[in-house]
Every structure is written in structure tokens, then in C-alpha cells.
Image 1: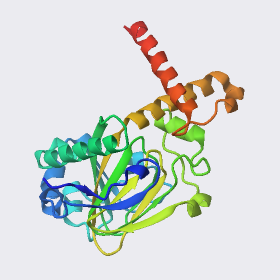
Image 2: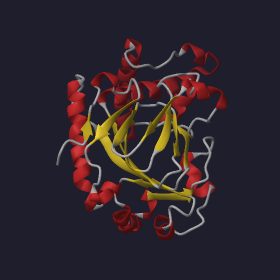
Image 3: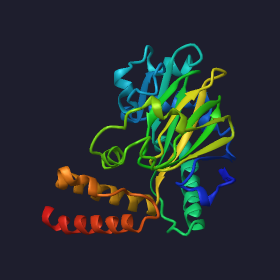
Image 4: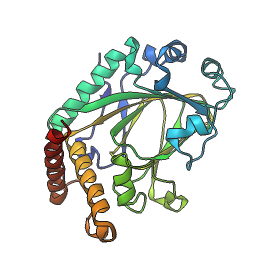
Length: 289
């Protein structure tokens, strides 16, 4: 298979959102006719189907429960232009039609890490599919992963906020979410001007850095089909460990938690926090046994 991602910027990885190109436009697995067969065949807990009339402030994790769809899954895929539907599919690589593409993307992510001097060992690499009606919205959220979002059909506007911007998402809310201590951070309309809006179309890719807040609105011109590859890097695994230690320290210190300090990439103290957390985890494992 030819290179999937074209124009990677190693200096921007998890530092800055940017656009590039992908080389798999027209991939048969991403055609609606194929998706109509594959998606209903996947495990039910991998498919999240909601009404497409969401807002930036809705909860992405519970949208399929809070905003029940008006149609069955099969009908929604068949009539996407006519109905309001938002379909998110976790790990479509469970199906053979996506396995080669998934493997190729993992290989390219490993090569990308090598180019920035990290150990070429991505982990937890998964694909996510997003199929939605025109004008559908993906609510504001942050992710525990690094992301490349590939567009295959339709257009969309993705607004991405700088990673680690505490005015967008507070340090404590980032810690809570990344450590699975609570739900996604809330949307705050007053931060809207801090984001950068990317309008992109089929053949384009958007890199969304680890913990960058973002929201999406599909264009009115067509059904949107896009796919993310999400993954962890040695750096983001280390940052996640540091965030875990911060969260633990805040619980222990209570009123004095303001002295804990922030976790940030390239901060030596964050690396020390990560090592301390891994040491604590290592010491706790024999006790659990």
C-alpha cells in the first residue's frame, strides 16, 4: 500500500494542530455501500448512533443515550442525506476490510516517532469512524490520545484549541479526564476565540495534539465520512503518568493542592512526576497479588 499520510511535520507532533494530505482517497472500505454492510456486523458496543442535532456543549460519551436516533442504524446509513444522524464506530479494524489500513497507519506512526527521536513504539492504536448527516455536530471534547483525522467524503470545520491551555481546559479538569476520574471537560462559550478553525475536505488530514480541546461541524454540502487514527506515544504515556501523580497529590493535599504545579511537555518536573508515578505503581503491584 502507498504511504497513507503525506506531509507529516515531526516538529508539530502533539504541539500544534496542522493539516496534511492522505493517499487513500477512494479506499473501498470507506465507501458508504461497504460501510452499510460492515457497521451493522460489528459488535454492538463498538457502534454509537445518535441524533445529529447535537451542540458543542453536549456530552460526546453519552450522546447516543441522551439524543436517541429517530431511525434504526441500517436506515440511518441508507438515508443519511435525509435524516439527522451521527454514527461513531470504535475499532472498525475488527473487520477484515480495515485491517491492512490499520496496520499501515501504525507502521507510519512508528516511523513518525522515530523521526522525532522517540522510541518507535505507538500503543493502543485504534481507528474511529465518523459517519454523519450534513450539518451534524461533534461536541467539544479532549482526547487521551494523539489523533490524525482523515476526511473521505463531505467537508467539515474542526476548531482546535492549543494543547495545555488552562483557559480552555483547567489543569485539574485535564487531570481528571485523562486519569478517568470524571467525564469530559465542559464547553465554555467564552473560549471560542482561542481556537483555530480548519475547514477541510476529502483527501485532507488534521493532526489534533494530545489533550487539545476541539469540536466539529459538518458542512451542509454532503454526508461526511471521516476516520481517525488515535494512538499513544512514549511521550504521551509519560505525560499521562505525570497527570496521574498530580491527581493523586491533589486528593492527598486537599486545600494545599494549588502547590502541585502543572504538567507540561518539556518540563523536567513532569518527567520526574512520571517516574515517581511508575515507581508507585510498581510498588503497588505485589500488594495486589
